[in-house]
Length: 175
Image (cartoon, rainbow, N blue to C red; front, side):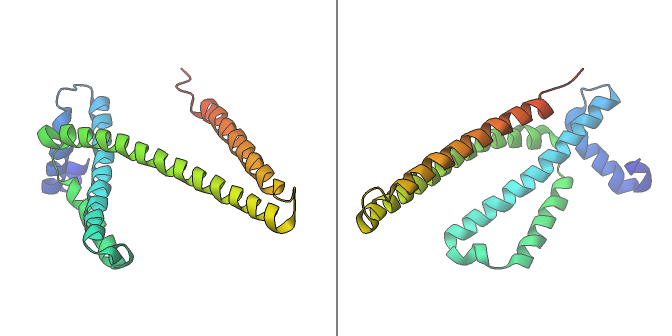
């Protein structure tokens, strides 16, 4: 349908987006394959955008706080430019492996950040408990220790509820 509405560009895009889907004879599988390719294009645009600005932030520390209109324009151009990239033989195989490795690294760093937040939070509230013991008298710092235990309980209950809800609503195919 796109090829009929925009003759040259439509044919070019259909050719680019279905390039890696040539082994699939079922039109529904080709459509699913090209849909995945669209998601990979948006993901690769975001990846390129954040890599560019990570390098910019390393070179100039204020780069993250400046030039927002230019950032929007760059991201839009990256998204538009990614539409014209052919699926194969380079884009999908290479980008998928880069994305897989990057996602592992991202999750590991995310876990480190969460552990650091929890450690700092606990350290801060234990220090407040110690200060309350010294400044306000014996037993007055227990409220901070109980607050740590209460927050831990709330977070555990919240995570178990979220796990159950995700299992109920996203537990797989019902057929």
